Picture (tube, rainbow, N blue to C red):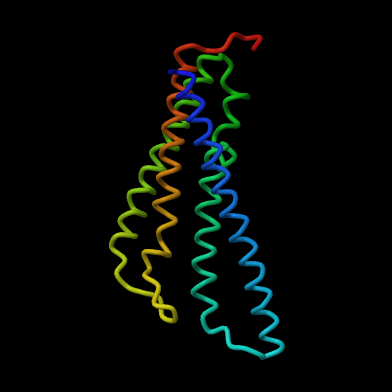
Length: 172
């Protein structure tokens, strides 16, 4: 039962990460194409791109927030203060406690971000000017990525708390 659950969770981790990476790559490619087309149209006015700003704004939001969630899963996001643990804190237990404290700060940040982004998304009643896309669609990437960050921050806190209770041997 335990192994089956771990296999399922690992599969879910890989699927979530692959989805976020795919979204980020596709959005980046779309941004590249649209920005290149906009530059071309400015020099060779063959078409109007009056809708350009709305789509670019939405794509940038998706790129930034889903990309941040992907980095969060892999623990590749910016970690302020983690450089201290190896230089100033000597014992394995103290390092584990310090890293747990950092994970809790990350969890608190993710919770606050998720709460306010969900509020912003649910309160957004207006639509975009050209396509009349509800702003909720534009903002939806923030609570979705925030929820992913909360889940993985909670996981990281649990893992780090286990390291506090059972520190690794000095040779490991």
